[in-house]
Length: 405
Image (cartoon, helix red, strand yellow):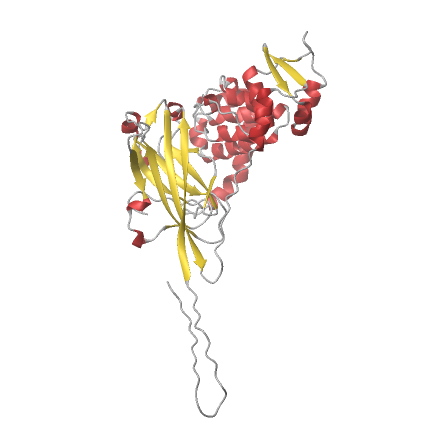
């Protein structure tokens, strides 16, 4: 759209004031589309199968057009009615909180890893540009494809190589510019990489001043980092631990792999990339505590690493189901994982009839009467709001199907 305002004048003979010719002026709002891409690499694809319909793996946040975005991949599909485990689903979500609507085009591609061609699995660019961009109305709004690709075909294709899948997302954000103001080049500020630098320091062992002996393995660290991140880590281990013949502090109650993950978090402020963290957890109450994420959760609780603790809680939160909720509830209660415990309690009362028929609930009834009482208290607390809840709610996440953008 072009809006032009003109003022013209000329010199007139005769009486009256002298008029001066002024130059014409115009303003021309214009739009342009800012494009960017992000490749989401999913390693250990086979381990994601069986997560359950509606459960997803998300990419790291990435910035395009001044907004942050996230890719969601559903290994077993987003909706049961759409695929019945036959299709994988893929969506792009506007992560940033926004006060106005965001107009954007998006494209999601599976990358052919033979390097010969690119599979155009689905894209809003397939539609005519005259139809306009997709509108992301609020932060959290999602657009994508419920039937992104047939899972059987995918697993026999060149898109899957070494159990790794790559999804390329291209986003074009529509922005409005004004011609009467100078156009400034957007400066992309990279994400902080301080954790990577500290990680190099940890891996190299340079300037380390403390050594830990864990299950026969040696770990070199720095007291300054340990003290800054966890005072309990420093006081319980460094200042109060027994030492071996080489002067290393002996750690008996933590496995080497878990201890390595603790140090990884302390230095890098992130989870260690390990397939065991994303494997389908067992729903059996007797074996859940033996899994790697459960041991890491217990270690995070012991040393008061609240952020790591929440990261572990979020892993288990995605695995809550009718059969697993009781075992996860017991784990959360044992490790004082407040957010995870509350989520389990809410899920239990919302699906109480089905949960009560599970083996886990029978175990809870026989062995943990106090925790069962908390379930009943939660039921009473939330019963009235659930009864008054309207049949249809407005939610903050919207999605579109392939044929209905």
